[in-house]
Amino acid sequence: MLSKKKDKIINDPIYGFVTLENGIITDLIDHPFFQRLRKISQLGLSYLVYPGAHHTRFHHAIGCLHLMSKAIIQIKQKGHVITNEESEALKIAILLHDIGHGPFSHALENSIVSNVSHEHLSSLFMHKLNEQFNGKLSLAIEIFNNKHPKKFLHQLVSSQLDMDRLDYLKRDSFFSGVTEGNIGTERIINMLDVVDDKLVVEEKGIYSIEKFLIARRLMYWQVYLHKTVVAAENMLIKVLKRAKYLMMNNHDIFATPTLSLFLKSNFSISDFENDNNLLENFAELDDNDIFICLKYWKKEEDFVLSNLSEMILNRNILKIKVQKNSFIESEIKEKEMELLKKNNISSEEVNYFIFTDKVSNNTYNIDKSNINILMKNGDVIDITSASDQFNIDALNKTVNKHFLCYPNKI
Image 1 (cartoon, rainbow, N blue to C red):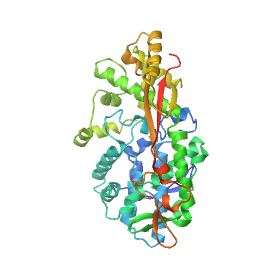
Image 2 (spheres, rainbow, N blue to C red):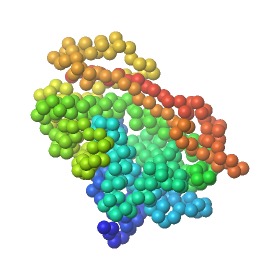
Image 3 (cartoon, helix red, strand yellow):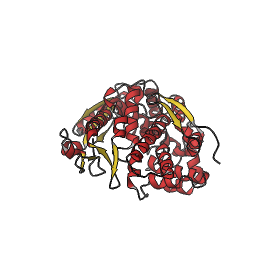
Image 4 (cartoon, rainbow, N blue to C red):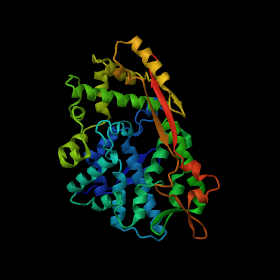
C-alpha cells in the first residue's frame, strides 16, 4: 500500500522548510483521515477575538512532526539509542496525536458525541489506519498508549514538556499575535536529554523552561480561555445541544447528512469500537458542516436555534461576566426574568441564553508528570526545586474562574 514518492518539502510559517519523509509518513499525511485536519480549526472560535487565528490542526500536526524529528536527532547525538523503527513510530504517533478532533477542536468535544474524548477517537483512528497499513503503526500505537518499555518515548509525545505543547504554544502565539506565548522551542529541544529512562532538560536550559511555563499560563488566560472566546464557544455548544434536542424530538430541521447522524443519536465509545462505519462517518465531519448548518438554522422557526445561530454568524456574542466566586442565584434570576419579559419563551429556553459555569487551569501539575532538570552535578530534580522563580504551591494550584453569560439584547 505504501507509495514510492520522493520526500516532500513544505514551507511552514513558523519553522520554514519542513521535510516530510518518503514512505509511511507521506502516505499517512495523504490519507483522507489526516487531510480532514485541514478543515478542523486549531483554536475554535478564537478568531472572533484574534482575527489571524485561522490555522488548523493540519498545521499543528506537521509542526509537531518537525519538532519530533529535531528531538530525535538531539537525543541520539547525546548517546541514547532510538532505533530507526522507534524513530518512525515516534513520528507517526505525534503526527496522528490529534487526528480524533471533531469540528472546532476542543470547543465541541463531547458535544457531537457524548463522553468520547478526542484522545479516544485518535486511538481508534490509529488502529483503523494500522489495519489499512498492514500493522505498520503497531509500535506507534504502543508508544502513544505508553505501553512501550522505553518510557521517555511516550514523554516526547505526551507529557508536560512534549512536542505537542512546544508547537501549539509557539504556533498559536504566532497566529493570534499574542507574543507572550512565543517560546524558544529550538533551545528547549537542544537541551533535552534522557536519564534513567526519563526525559530531562539540561540545567543551562532552565530559563527557557521558566519562560515556557509562564507562556503557557499567559496563553491560557489570554487566548484559550479569553472570556469572549469562552462565551462564543459555549454558544456553539448550546446551538448543537438545541439542534440535537429538536432532531431527537422529530422536528424537521436541516443538517448535513453526516452531522444529522450524530444529532439523532447518542453514541458512546463502545459504539465506535463495534461499528467501523461510525468512525468513517465521523471522519466526514469538519468545521464546514457546522458553518453550513448555522447558515440554515438562522432561518429556522425555533427561537433558540435561529437566534443563537445568527448571533454566532454575526459575532453578536453573549455578554460575559467573570469573577473568582460563584454567581449568586438572585443575579441569575434577575437576568432570566428580564429575558422572559422581553420574549415569549419558556424558562427552559432561557437557559440557552443565560447560563453560568467555570473554567479552570493550572500552570504545572506536579502530580501528573514532572519536568525534570539535569543539574551540572548529575542530580535530577523537578523544575520547581531547580528554579528560584517558582513556588510549587502557586504553580500547582488550579485557578478557577466563574462566568455568567447573558444577552445584551435579542
